[in-house]
Length: 256
Ligand SMILES: NC(=O)c1ccc[n+]([C@@H]2O[C@H](COP(=O)([O-])OP(=O)(O)OC[C@H]3O[C@@H](n4cnc5c(N)ncnc54)[C@H](OP(=O)(O)O)[C@@H]3O)[C@@H](O)[C@H]2O)c1
Image 1 (tube, rainbow, N blue to C red):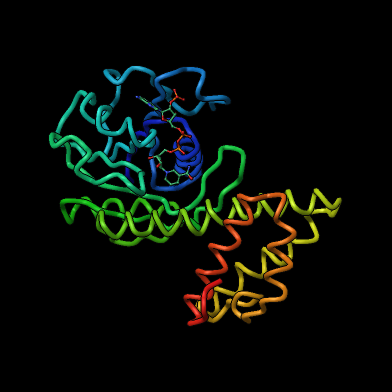
Image 2: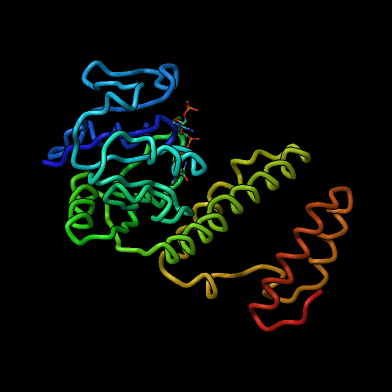
């Protein structure tokens, strides 16, 4: 049995609490949020805490707060020599105060309070200073049904940067596509099978091999047509040119 305290009631904190509640072998001791209102629908079985001085003893303290608050919050914790981890993809392990046994428990997934999440699809990137602590975090991930990997700060930051390309930038491209289809009164649903197939394809082949389309085919007629269509959206036209050139460079073709 591993006992945990979750600090933070945002997207990640809320999902972790839900997963810990339903996991065998994990004892959720407390859930801390600085503001009572941050926890929308507290369940009776969870002990809530709004004062760091009232935190109880636990095997692991998980700081799931905004990146910029991690350092100061770890200093404010009124104890030392306990395992304290953060969940950030970009912050160094050393951002945590030296008085703690420090670690990172970064869930590489996109979290929103409003979406359901299957923790078997949430890989945890673990970093610690001590082998016993990494064993404990690995066990914690296993009890949640999640895979885990030992990943150092530099590797985690590279993964986080890749995740921005894969998730945030792709999602912004979906948004642009949504706007373009709305403009011509086409339902965005028509594109949804393509979205799924694009994600499915790279499970079986490399992104390099999966690429198709006018840039990869060097189809200048279609590219020119698209660029003309985007003349009323100069930002999107510039983005189209940049991505087309990126694909052409990757596949050894002359840029626009
Ligand atoms: N969202 C994701 O997809 C995702 C994925 C992987 C990792 N992460 C990482 O997980 C961490 C939490 O992200 P999130 O998406 O859950 O953030 P979030 O939804 O914006 O929630 C941030 C939480 O931090 C609390 N907070 C901010 N400053 C604080 C302070 N000074 N003292 C105490 N609490 C404070 C906020 O409290 P209030 O409600 O009172 O403002 C809120 O509960 C971040 O390190 C993030 O990089 C996020």
